[in-house]
Length: 320
Image 1 (cartoon, rainbow, N blue to C red):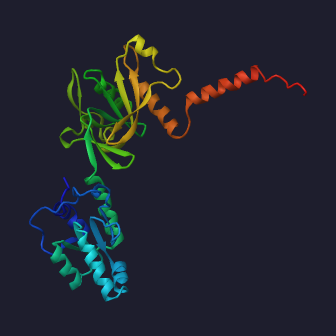
Image 2: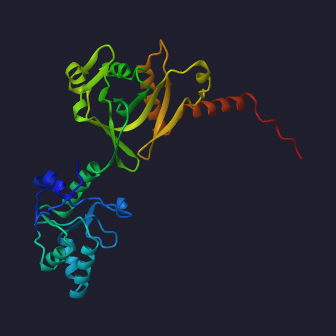
Image 3: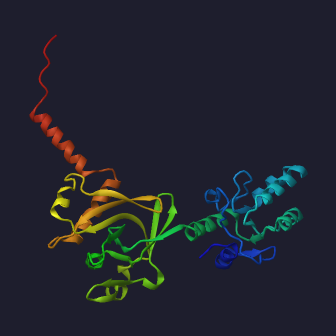
């Protein structure tokens, strides 16, 4: 788990050519703090003293800007940079920091890090890495599967048939992501990415058959490591009264909130004789159409309204 500056350097240092300019801190240097507003603070970016980043990057462009400020303004800017207590200041493009930066770093106990990569390349790589490494996460009980390119989470009570349905879908060419404990990370304001814990990867438990290795049974194409969550299907054994409460036009579409993201949810009745695999495929196709702006229920109502207006045209107006 990436939580400290030291672990970040250990994991990305060789690839991004990161090195310690000042000695590595003895205690963990957290990338996020408990300070108010820190969760809204950008993790990494170019030199910014108005909205300071946790990791401030200084490249050639920043050095040119600082050199044009004059001695007094230069010193004030450097002091402001370090007084905001960033997790570290990173010098890109192989830059060796001058004495003013080293003195301010020593006074505030701020680590200095160097890299031979350009600032844009360095920021892009680290931003992508940190977005995934530090994303909020939650484990949800269910089976996460890719259907027609959409990430679908099958949920429901134990023994309702989630794994059997997943196996049926896999046999129809769809792909397994995670069984029992898929883990979701919020990687963007409205985006959840689901993955499988390493110990459970490729496995699916089916009652009566035990643990199945989907990769070994169906091949490499039957599994996928991660997918964006697009739809939740809640399998529920509903009685007749509950079935009659479902809207005949819009169905049982609702939403479920996971990590602050509203995910479309469909409650799918489970009953003997229902081909749930076909129904899941139809639900996914229907959701794809909704995303594209088409709703069959609205189209149906409009078509009926047009038919009624043709059968019963407006009466002619009488002259006044």
